Length: 255
Image 1 (tube, rainbow, N blue to C red):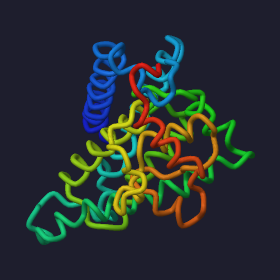
Image 2: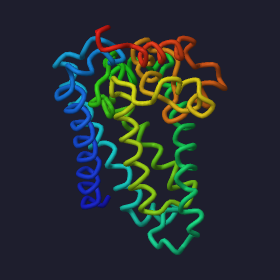
Image 3: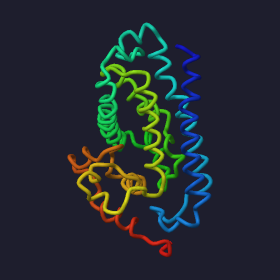
């Protein structure tokens, strides 16, 4: 294994998580907390113990996730079997651009079915319960996984590099987008506008309200970026649209 690459990835993954989650926490949970509390999806706030648990497991996740690229890309005996490339001229610029939406669709599909699998009663407590201890998640819950789930979450890296041509920049920018959307999904506030959940485009996009309902009730709403699979498989919660509008229509004085 390439240890230099490993520690580089630890710093990269960790700095992104800490910067983005901390910035979101500072804005929504500290600086503007009193002004926007009435708009919070769940009106209560997590406890200090919740924040520390989320940060602790997230840091552990960061160290686990960094192993995958260090082992695969950092090992010539393995990397030769991947489709990872560093010369941007090796594939067309058309593919370079199209790869990003393709990666999003692949990741969303991988996550949906993996997520449903770890909700099976036989594996839930062992693998997924740690993440669901955040019944009222904060931005720090973005990477709060049991080590076994962290390995499964990192598995998407293997799917990418062994199935489609992926450039270094694909991985850098896509996983930046992933943590941004993950922090938003666990934010505790909804950033999309009123009516978004029923809009012709918005109805297919995952929202913070949607994922917050999953954390609150443990059932339904299994998607990551999109709601294609949830709607196709009938796992979208029936109260989603109602809750979305209730949150967006709530006034500050209702808090």
